[in-house]
Length: 186
Image (cartoon, rainbow, N blue to C red; front, side, top):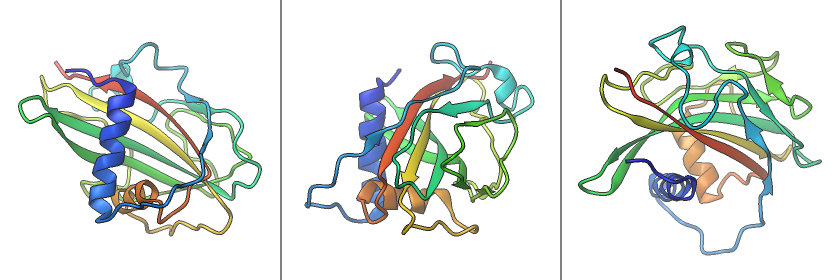
């Protein structure tokens, strides 16, 4: 079962809001759209070399203009394991990076720019990893958030709580970009 970008984003937002334990009834300012992609990912499937079947290193990532008042960028790789029978998805943060300089517009494959730091992923990891169970397809969404200078992310952060705070608007993002990919181990 493949989720459309709109459905995946909806699941991501709803799940993260539930994780935060609250929702906001006040309208939030519109997020600036940030063009975000990887030249290494053609179509919707991530090449095996960027998974545990290859070198398990992050693909090259690039993005466009961020809002002028951006203080830092946060990058997350969110996994969604879909249960078609219940129409639910279990979310996980497979990789979380914060402290990205807003002047940057790309990250080379397998590299972390100066000043950036890796947070804790859902499974206690502090590294990039795409490694679903063999035969089980999983969808992934690369998420990029622009935060204002007033919002700081601790170098010792955990990805899922930060994602929940962003979704619930308790941590206000001013820009956002994302793209979806999938991977199935054989």
